[in-house]
Length: 155
Image (cartoon, rainbow, N blue to C red; front, side, top):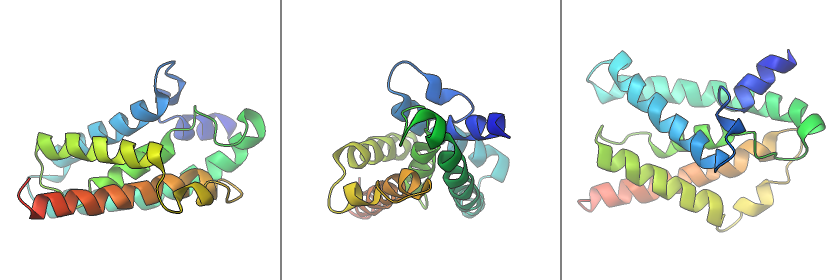
């Protein structure tokens, strides 16, 4: 079971990247979103439905995997990138399928994830793997709100 947790938490091994593993985890989110679009068909509503399902499933898996792996790797280890993947998916909910929005979502999510404005920093300390996931979920929500505003304003 530990191998499964490692596979999930590291984003299929992406978290082992020696350079910017968190960014690599977010890029994995963009790649999966891109592939989902083709699996789901041209109508964005199906992509968003599938993406939302993945967010729910991998949030739960990420919490459980993080809880178990924190005992081995320490609290919020850099190898754990499923939180970045899920946060990236949240930022991409309800966006038109265009490269400029995918890139903007990546930049916005990583900015909020690194900067950690408002109370994001506080939720990192929640126990049992919840804090690992929650700070990136909130960063993803912030990114989603800003990106949606940019789209409304004509970006």
